[in-house]
Length: 140
Image (tube, rainbow, N blue to C red; front, side, top):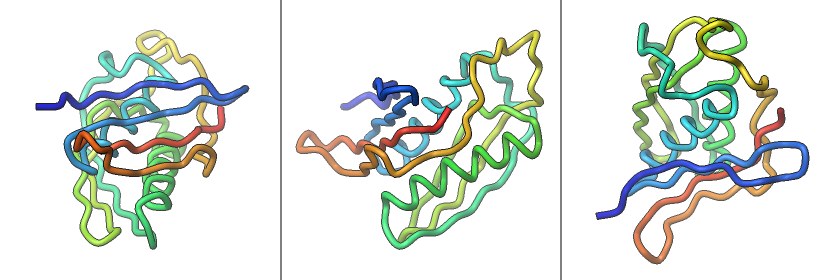
């Protein structure tokens, strides 16, 4: 059985985020964790409150960008960080529950602010080993 995970990959002045999972949903969840990890250690983000997010796009790649940008929007407008994600995708429509807490500079030691997800290095695909990969570059 494959293990879901996330990772960063270098990209000039910005940061690549990649999520890997046994399903497309897991890959999207892991990409969201990777994005949170650009800002702070996701392990220290408490799941204090749940927020619902929904978005739709014509294909998986655009859906990934819309998903990550919806998270960036929620973080910016609420001044919150999110560390737990539950994603459901059906026919290029995403519905997610995300859990987080208000930003606290003393607790979270914020590294950078993410301006948005981009189309650079954008990819959502099922690999030959069965794992799903979802990735793009975020503008920091």
